Length: 161
Image: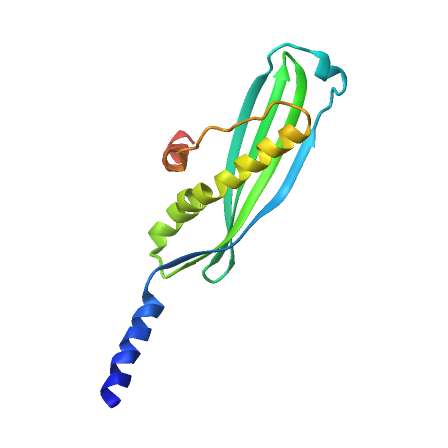
């Protein structure tokens, strides 16, 4: 029996230092919809232009626990008139433990936003439909490319000062 107990101790020790990632909670943190030119905008048959802005943020809540949010802003305009403006902030609480420091930023900037984006996409589409418009289906986002672009801009920023 003593041998079994000795074998169990190292396994538990290994479990404590193994990298860990889990989703604790996914939630819609904020959502807003504006139709500043209603009801007249509904009679305009001109095809609107749609613009999308995206941002993502991460913050440490406690040791190994992070809140990651992505904010999606969709603006639809006909010339200078706003048809609608939708803002959605989708958030998640993630447990990230025993991961090397150099990988934390990539997990918070790529992995977590990839998990959150489908929820944000659905929330945007749902709000636009409820407002009486055709659904806006956001194209998939390559968060890896966005992350690389942000890192490159950060690297170039000090050189320009």
